[in-house]
Image: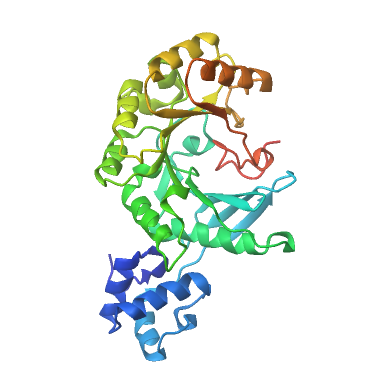
Length: 355
């Protein structure tokens, strides 16, 4: 990396911020103030940071910067509480997407970790793009900064806090492990965004090399794994990642993954009509999951243009979930938000309309 490339403050956790500030002559208290002002005051440039001596800010400006995302389009859904998909661009002009999902006095932000994805899941719009590039930790964090600013002014109503972060946007988070793990730590910084660990979910299509690295951190991360099939034959057709790392390996990982005693690994199961939604699928899935500490989220497929898969009828979705629950598996149906703006699960990277 060129020596002229400046460090982006949004890409620093507490330790990184202390090291940077020390390099320009400031102590730990100054670093804490820089972190606090960065996230509390919303400065656009380093001289706008509050509570820090001007001379130190001048030195800091020589080695660091505050990056920003450019909002290309904001696409609110037609829902009563609009889900909004933000198409944003980084400094290189390449676009990616962030989804903000309000619900009462709560809100969830679905963040991207890559532009495109190389996992190649056949039902996913992002996977059809291939991998364009990884996002930096700063670009990941800035999606939450953007969402917080948007929520503060939503329809001139009372500001609502960000209560949940899900790494379920564009990309396979654990295929960009270093940036994702750094951003995960930054989001929790008490002088920054201060998102509690239990409110941050990292998802994965089942990319075992990244999952193994995650387990090695020894931290009880809230984890969601995309299962989507009751047999390796079906899952391999839907998700090429299953070929090197089949279902049994994924479930064994889920069982051994470090987690809090009151938490289970969440398995996401997207239903496709006539593919993985039969009574036989329920039976196989119940057998696979018997005795395992997991929970299942059943999600009806969100259509993607050009993909010859169909969304099951609502009654079939409910019947599938009820049958699985009756066999002793903790199960719930997750309702998708933002489908009309291509903002739901599997639709990101698809522009602005599902019509």
